[in-house]
Image (cartoon, rainbow, N blue to C red):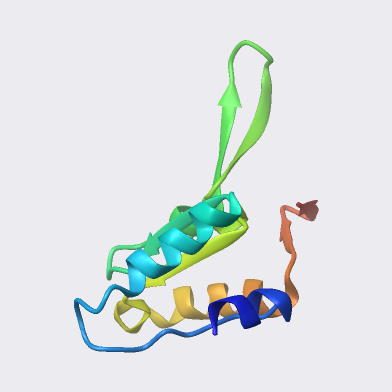
Length: 109
């Protein structure tokens, strides 16, 4: 199922009982394919910047730069999405559907 979802450029929801190696399976696949990988742990205190990243002011360059968050990986493992607030689920689902992000009217790749 993992490989089929990759070939179809799709998404995969892995459900199952705790401790049946779902995370390990995904990490092994990512490592074997040399993909950029991140994991997002959905908790009640999660903020959108934990998913998207943050804009910071670089004193040396005297400009604002965007530091990408975990959503900008080739493969993302989202854990405990049922614990997330509705606004965070909506943000993730919009990113998932649109496959692009506009931040302050600027497209982010």
